[in-house]
Amino acid sequence: MCGIIARIGRGDATETLLSGLENLEYRGYDSAGIAVQNGSGVKVHKTTGEVDDLKSTLDARPSGNIGIGHTRWSTHGPPTDENAHPHTDTAGDVAVVHNGVIDNYDALRAELRERGHEFESDTDTEVIPHLIDEYRQESEDTELAVRKAIDTLEGSYAIAAIVDGEERVYAARKGSPLVLGLDEEEWFLASDVPAFLDHTDEVIYLEDGDLVVLEPDAYRITNVAGEPVERSVDTVDWDPEDAGKGEYDHYMQKEIHCQPTALSNTIEGRVEDGTVAFDDLESGSFADVDCVQFVACGTSFHASMYGAQLLRAAAVPTEVIRASEYEAAAGPVDEATLVVAVTQSGETADTLDAVRTAAGRGARTLAMTNVVGSTAAREADDAIYIRAGPEVGVAATKTYSSQAVTLALLTHRLAEDVPDATPADDAEAMLEALEDLPRHVETVLETSQARALAWEVMDNQSYFFIGNGFGHSVALEGALKFKEITYEHAEGFASGELKHGPLALVTEESPIFAVYTGGDDEKTKTNAIEAQSRGAPIVAVGPDDHPLVDVADAHLCVPETHPVWAGLLANVQLQLVSYYAAKLLDRPIDKPRNLAKSVTVE
Ligand code: F6R
Image (tube, rainbow, N blue to C red; front, side, top):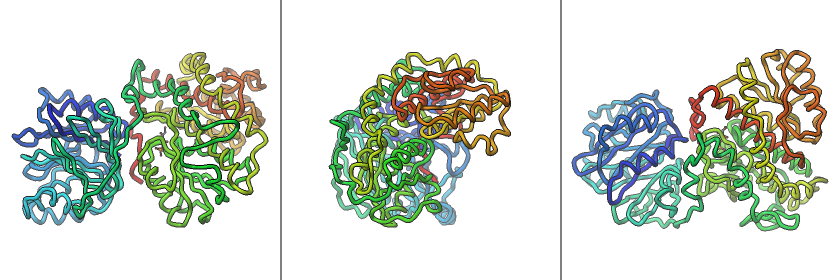
């Protein structure tokens, strides 16, 4: 977790660092800091809290053309001023920001202490500036000292360092993301592109083992041995406006409302005359696949349930496995197993670990992600992008919709390629109906009664979400979103499971959101009615023409469409309910407590 940024060039670095950190806050927001270098020492400013808190501690903006910055999600040590980054060596000459985890920091710290180094924080990071300082004293060659220091580290890192008196930024990556941004008059390094998207869309995605030296008018990439490394320059097709909140109060609200556009981008150019095409994956490229495993976490897991249900309908043996449980839960794999890692960020440690395990066991791997150049995209054998545009709100919204649609398209392709697959009877109808999905989402956004409903249902004890089939995925996702941003107790169940235990919790103070899609929803209807007879208010979430609507206490309506897409429309209604409920409760919607968007620790 954590976001890092570095900047070197003409003019002052501070404003760029602060605005870059704001765009990285989705990665962590329990403390923040910057260090700038201006020829009269390295000046560090850091504090507990968010980037706004950091800004308010800066009476006068520190000036300097070279700087680094950090926004933290604590792993080692609580969120305190001392544990905030940047960290320095004892003399304060070397300042470092770090994203990742140094596994051998305890041993390194003990050795360094014996040699006279003093530590001020509980963090694993603090050993890095001390190591650089030690090696600099041996040779006075800072680049060599950085190489030796990172060679000593075990674990994962993206680091950026500045050194008193040097017109340089040093950086390195292993296992944590780091992107180089190239503008005409300045260079950037950051954990993610939105940090510098206002300045440039020309990027280099660095690889594990890369070490970068930035100078005001040049940059060099080498490996740890100091040998030059060639990396290609890519142009990012995100709009700088994608990185801001625009007219909305929250990123989450913006991201819910831009789903029609996100979905149009997801679909564009991929469906023609009833067939599905993905760049770089020609027809027949899955002809040697005989079974599929989806691995994912959280919201991406819920989207994967969509893919799994569709694939099973096409007679392709499929498992959907929580990535953190992969070691224990996955069935055997071989080269005919396609392991699909569904991950918005492409950086989730549990998912990456599952993919590496699967690849180690001989499986073919495919990353389905939103982030070009992410670790999942680079490590998997193939990558498919969901093209949702940057998602900054910690609660995933538009990426769930784009993942589910991309998964539906992938299953269509697999059903064509996999030798024993038999495309589902309604596969063509599903593709045809997809064309109208962005328009239907627009209709939901324009007509939703979710805001009024949120006001009505708040002030209850628990909130339950049920659904079967595609509705099951949506029920789980609805409950996750609700608890994540309202902090209220919410659970999602397969409709039929309600009576196997959870019914004991049902009272008149536990509204039940019953998600149905117009497919086989019988269990949702009967279980909702059973809960209603125990006093629970029922909110029906689905198309108008359904018997549940007549018995429900409230209805969130979605347009009539194919059941697969009706589920996604129901999910948009639930996103809106969660958003308005959290707003009513005055929660920090974009930055829920204890969470961060990309979970890069296991
Ligand atoms: C919930 C949420 C998380 C993520 C999960 C996986 O709103 O965003 O549950 O879905 O941490 O993240 P990715 O998709 O980046 O692997």
